[in-house]
Amino acid sequence: MNLNQITIPSINIEESVAFYKTLGLHLIVDVIPNYARFECPDGESTFSIHKVDSVTKNSGVTIYFEDDNLDALVEKLKKKGVKFDSLPEDKFWLWREAHLQDPDGNNIILYHAGENRKNPPWRIN
Image (cartoon, rainbow, N blue to C red; front, side, top):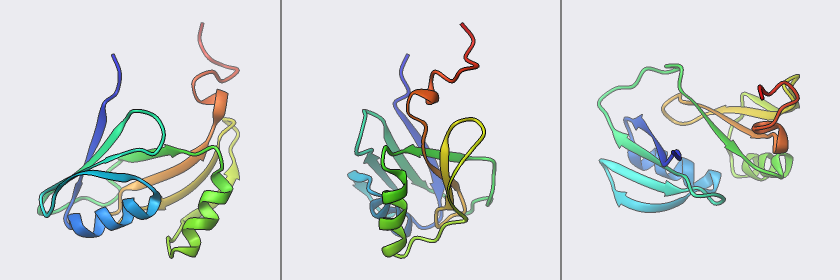
């Protein structure tokens, strides 16, 4: 089994599409104002947004996007006006993370874990 895509809700698809394009995702399905789907620039997974009338901010959904050059990506995004809740820092679980929110309040973590993503020292055999 392989994860195909994640779909999140949005009250304003146009604003969300602009935001995720700024992050570097590639728009592949445009049924705005009701739905949009993106390809991630690396890997095979896709990410989509569907129109809803309301969203619950901080609903517990967290979206993780990994980038090998996290610090450079964050600097590039800051120059484009993206606001971060926290800048890149090393975590005790061996990931480097930066935190932000999309226009609907969904939590996003941009991170780099490398080999530790699937094979941390405490992985169960």
